[in-house]
Image (cartoon, rainbow, N blue to C red; front, top):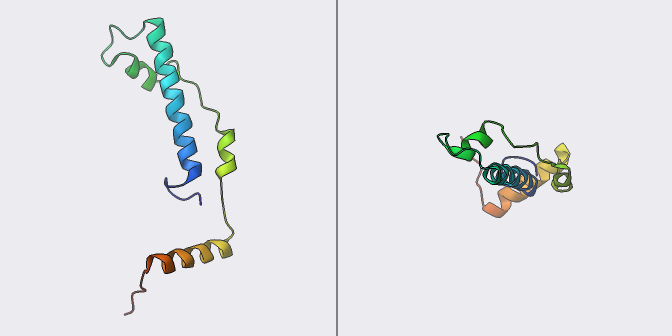
Length: 89
């Protein structure tokens, strides 16, 4: 499901962003920039230099948005698997 960070869709997106960060960092280092800047190339990249928006199109294959009915069934399964008890007051 596409809730939170612990799913294939979000892992794919996070990996794509991290990949773009490292690509941008290597571009900066290869150009020799960031030598006289506190934080160096990492600082420049985090401020938006050298970095491009990553292509996340391939991550759509992992996107799963269930209907309300299916989400309810999945939740019930998870509750059963984990042995979660309902609070009764």
